[in-house]
Image 1 (spheres, rainbow, N blue to C red):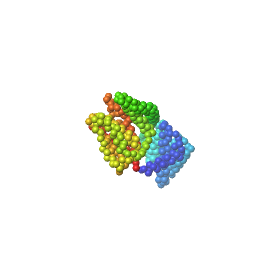
Image 2 (cartoon, rainbow, N blue to C red; image 1 turned 90 degrees about the vertical axis):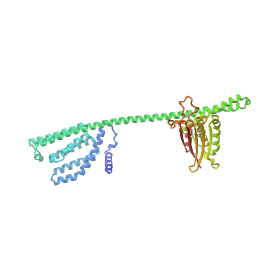
Image 3 (cartoon, rainbow, N blue to C red; image 1 turned 45 degrees about the vertical axis):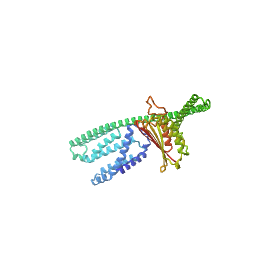
Image 4 (cartoon, helix red, strand yellow; image 1 turned 120 degrees about the vertical axis):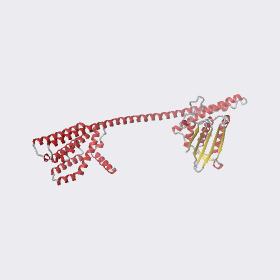
Length: 461
């Protein structure tokens, strides 16, 4: 079945290209689809005619029906002429095709009577004309058939001409057969016309829906491009503003450092200087995070790898947050499983430092008196991975928030009036950095029981 389908497709495609129909612009009106259907009917009719020609002619010769031989031969030659003529228009081909089969049907009825296939051919011809022509053409074909039947009955009744089949069938039988054929042909033509109309309307509706979908798709693409452009403008704006703010901040921090050398015996004075310096450093970190997330979103963030001692970074980050944890009465401990001979690693030290700072800062932020934070680190030599785990017994994260917690500027307690401080981009930066270093960040959390961030980064030789 598949082989026949492929052969038919190749046969039809060749003929379509042969007559140049494929070069025409497709139209959405019904006449275009009728033309395509006529091409299929023509090539199929020719194939079946050639296939049945030899047995049909052979049988006619055996029965001494030479008139039938001539009829079949002329009909096949006309089909071949229509098939190979590239200059003739499809409308002309339709007319000649119909007239050829009409004459063949009439001749077969006159020669063979009701025992031949002339009446069946007339019935099928009315259906075919309705398909590749129109409802009006189909009804006209039935009318032509009715006129032919009427002439045959008149000839039979008046005895003008004696046909052989008059001897086989009484006029009453012919009348009943002819009337039934006309009624059934007309009913079939009207039914086929109704079906074609419904199919055509459905196709038009489908085309309208497709056009609407195409238009909506274009609008979505435009909206997407505008959103991307807006994101790029936003990132560019944040980058520029970050630079503009960081420059004066360095000036403020530099002045604070100079002010520390004055009035060293005045504790209140020194306390104010510490407040200026601490607040300036916090603001500088926020600006740095904004600049980093904008670089990540615009693809401008790069990786700079080097050899360094990983324990130095771990100890530095631990000592940075230990005073704050002790101030909140939170137990902060380290489980170090990295041996002395493995402390030298090759990766981006700045990004690893930033990852640990953001994750530990998050753990300290969401823990309170009596809670604990455990930082674990190890190296998997077989997989060439540096692994970390930062586990706390703090407030935890709701299950419905876990999928969105890594979104930029998102905070779990955003609806809480007593919300904790934070820009909401530390976790986004950490996740992006980990992926840039060839690793993966996994979050496990349960509300009111705590959170565990564990991740690994790939180590180069």
